[in-house]
Length: 133
Ligand SMILES: [Cu+2]
Image 1 (cartoon, rainbow, N blue to C red):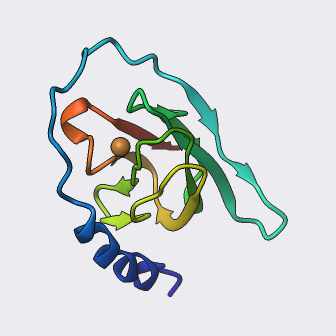
Image 2: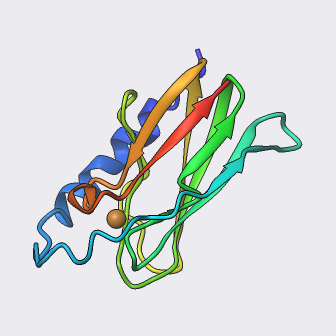
């Protein structure tokens, strides 16, 4: 029983507050370069990865390689545009992360590919993938 759902649900109320953005033009749909990084294993045996979100509405890395098991994902926002990070199939969300802040979530994943998205910038294709193998 190592599921981190309570943390995520506690953060959802924060999300609802910031959900109404201006909805301006989506900007240029320039091809977002795909960057890849592997999760590292911390002293406690848990896999960890830090993902940044920037003002170009991109995640870095956008592809996370991990092994099956527990993975801690930390989202750090580097620009003035706040972001969140939601692992789609399991609906675990960091909540809104403002400039120079970071928040972590823990997910337990088996083999497969899992989409993660910024729920605020989904239409700008701010997405990534966790590749568990
Ligand atoms: Cu975003």
